[in-house]
Image 1 (cartoon, rainbow, N blue to C red):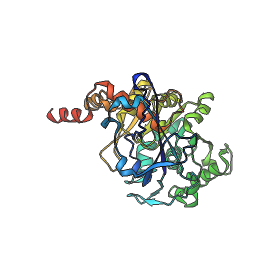
Image 2: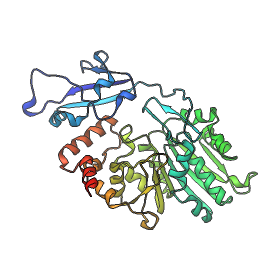
Image 3: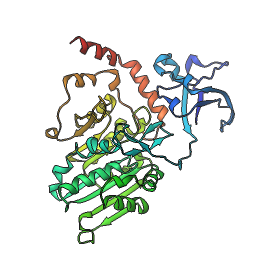
Image 4: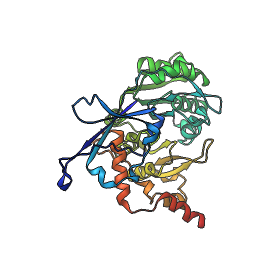
Length: 378
């Protein structure tokens, strides 16, 4: 469950001997995380005693619906008491492959329309791995490794095109129990050997090196799994000067995990991308695309997988990207395109969301509904 702390910040004429503590609920839909929210007063550093317990569904109120000035006098932070070693149970998707549901984020790890298809058509194919396999050596940065599907799809795509291609993978993941559970449930068996065996070894040992001349000649792979918050662990490939031919950006949605969609984080991601490398993600959120543009990337669409919304690809090489339509480019000039910000790369989900919503309140830009209405007329 989530605990929400309300705390007044006394400034100027708002200081008062009579203080009303009230929680600020962000636009994030916390009702899908937990059935109840507890509210605490800062009576002690431990915040041990809840003063109010309400169904979370009653608390789904956007900050845009309250007086924006209030946010300047109240501070909110969230924490989760979910067990990070939770057991994951497979959920079948429309293409017959399986994924997991995250209680922490209230979302599945992959599209319900097809977990395996998403890894192929949103990541492996748009990053042109099949075409680039002829180079003989490819580097991949897999952000939010999860069940390992994106890396598996990448290896299958590369080795199908060139069995002799050497692949180097750096995988970032915060929760080791996710790929472990995928292995325990044999979910990687949807891919041909030696891919399941190699990725199993990667998770067990957190690194794998299958050199040229090994018994399994087609499985030349140099891979490392780095555990922790990706905002910090991405420093490893940065410091090594790692330049990826393909980057898979696959966190939970921006509203559920804004930490990994901020201008600051995506700037670090872009620094790990080779000059002709491609970053791929399932998200088409304008806030995400704005962050990519701010990082100096050209942005384009990928084909939808079982839904209307496309994904996004980005590259420093415009020739590899089909430009956005005029309608999509204009959406980057709306309130929805205000990016998430995390200057210290350490802020909580709630603080990042509140910061963005306050910026949206003051931006004076066209809303998405106004943008849609205008384009319907056209």
